[in-house]
Amino acid sequence: MRQVLDLLGFVAVEMEGDQIRGPCPIHGASSPNSRSFSANVAKGAFHCFGCHAKGNHFDLWAAATDQNLHGAATDLGNRLSISVPTKRPGKPPVRGQQQPEKRNPY
Image 1: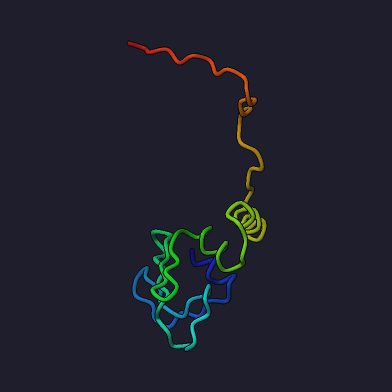
Image 2 (image 1 turned 60 degrees about the vertical axis):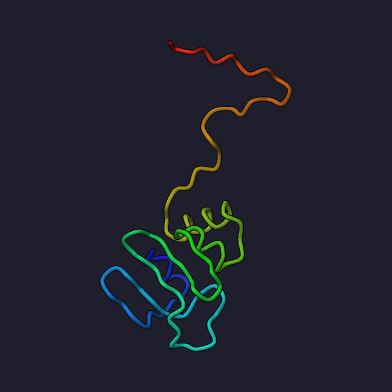
C-alpha cells in the first residue's frame, strides 16, 4: 500500500502505526491538511470518508488513475516490476458446449 501511495504522490498528514491519514488522492480534497483519506498499510486497505471510496491497493490505483481493475493491475505491476498474468489458467468453456456432469463423491 505504501508503494502505491508513493507513486500517487500522496503526502501523509498524520501517521500512527500502520494507519496513514491525509487528503484523498482520488477526489482531491480541497485542503492539504484534510484527513478524509485513511489507509492501513499492514492490511493493504483504504477508505475515504469524503468520496466513500474503499478497497485494496488495486482499487486505489484504478480509482486514482481512472482505469478498470484489470488495467490498473497491469499498470501497477509494470510500475512495481511485478509479473501480472495475462490469461487465466485452463481454457474457458465454449458457448453452447455441454459441461461435463459433476459426480457426487458420496
